[in-house]
Amino acid sequence: GLIAGCLAVVALGGFDLEDFWFPPSLLVMAAGGVLVGVGTKLGGGCTSGHGVCGLARLSGRSMTATVTFLAVAIAVVFLTRHVF
Image (tube, one colour):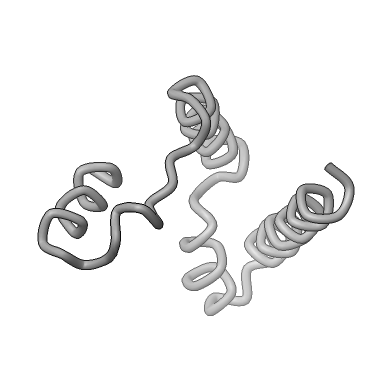
């Protein structure tokens, strides 16, 4: 769905195709999908669910999950932009 949606935007003239970037391989996309699925299962829900609904309910579990998601995201961005 994500790929089809992006291609539809390109087909409708939403932006220049030269700026469109795909991950290096299908293996990278598949690995990303698997990691998202595993993380959702281990975390007991999706990031949006914990961040929006769980925090609104003042759930301790959602607070822990959201802080963990954000910390890992910050670490990954730092490593990919400044270390690797």
